[in-house]
Amino acid sequence: MLNRLKILLLTLLITFSVSTKVYAADQPWVNDLRKLFLANAANIYELNIRTFNANDKNGNGIIDFDLGEESGNFINAIDRLDELKNANINAIHVQPITPIGKTKALGTAGSLYSASGFDSLNPQLKSSKSALSIEDQAKKFIDEAHKRNIRVIIDLPACGSYDLYMQQPELFIKDKNGQPVIPADWTDVRLLNSGTEENINRDVYNLYKSFVDMVLELGADGIRADVAPLKPAKFWKELIEYSRKRDPQFMWLAETSDSWTAPISTYGVYTPYNKLLEAGFDGYYGSWFNIKNWKTADELYKHIKFNQELLSKYKDKKSVIGSFTTHDEMSPILINGNKFSEMITWLNATLPLNAYFVDGFPTGDNYIYFWANKKAPKTYTDDDYYFIHRGKIDIFNFSRKPGAANYDLYENFLMSTKLRQITAPLLANGKLTILKSDNPKVFAYAMSHNEKTVLVFGNLNFSDISECKVKVPKYNENLMTVPIKIKSIPVFKNNKFNIKMEPGEIIVLLVEGFSI
Image (tube, rainbow, N blue to C red):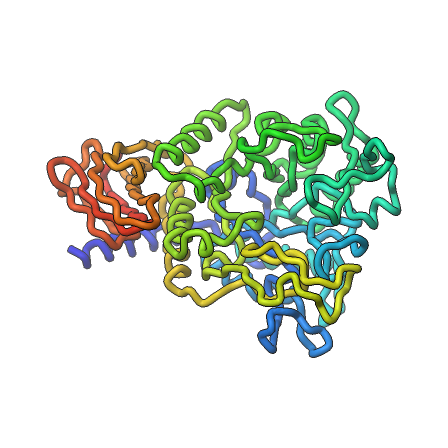
């Protein structure tokens, strides 16, 4: 029986690989990111070029340029693209590539999100080993991604650096004392004055328009808008429509959530997620990152249903990313260990959304840097401390390449992204059914389409074993069932699955010839 199941799974893999569109190296790239995203078919990998393929020879976690070490750049980043292709990644979210402020900075290299300009590239990302200009190096990186069927999303920073404020103070909001506004606790940036719904600020709009021009010229396929609620809906609507006149498939992702209900600053505007979607954004983050606080299956179900209802309300199709963990979230390893990372991996693979992962997550990086927040012997900004957000990927310093050596977790990651490929029509067109579990801490759901069903059972109790019974309508033991992710064996008895699950365990089954 087990051999039959392996043969079936292998057949499915071969069938899919034959039907996958392949771009030849000499074939012009045609952007299809928006179509891919709206079909829930994007496997997105977030990366920081500055660390993506950094060469830390002595293993001290910091790039010592004086010792001949090399930080990540557009050219050496190309060397890791095959790794992403082989992991079934078909889109990358590249964190900001704009120049970085060095005054009132955070970290020895400066935050990626402290933009000192919007129409040029960060010189930190230029390889000294290439004679190409930095613009041509960026184009080469994007072109090489396209050759591997990987789309490129570029991050658009929400605020300007203090350096930019000093150069162009008219672009920024001032407080009652005439000082530039520090949004939230982001002390290295100042709040741009984007205007209001009635009167958008054309100077800031043109600044962002120049960014759109730049990334389109580089050949990128979409934009991720950092803290999108900080701009009026009209601001985004005009900008999105402008980009779509040049490339109808140009995709826009809003960093926003239904959990966000208040403005970052009392001096700034606040545009809620639904208004941003109405303005033309193709998708948003949702609130999947709240999974770290969910104790019962009903909390997960509530957000699944919320997104299904929300995303069906608009004239144009919309989608969402699996924002279970992002660069703003602490490593799942530190929250609930390997099991939590595995659960996030498989939820990304089986829910109707676009999978989303941060560089280092697939191999279990905890993003703990032993030199964090200590005084640095050398700095490239006015901050001589290694500023770090504990347990989060470093965006402030010239640091090591993200990653760890958790091969079991990486195997799960590869299996999950391959399952997404196999079940792409199911995620795009399938029906999600919440299944009834008699244990409130165990979630159960099914995705069905065209006589193919994925069954998922998960234990949100990360400290104790959970036993449960789950009824799956019309299922019977004679159906061909492939165990994709399994440790505890579900027993089908009396028309129900009887399961005894380990803490934090998730089970994924693929059923052929069966739909709910």
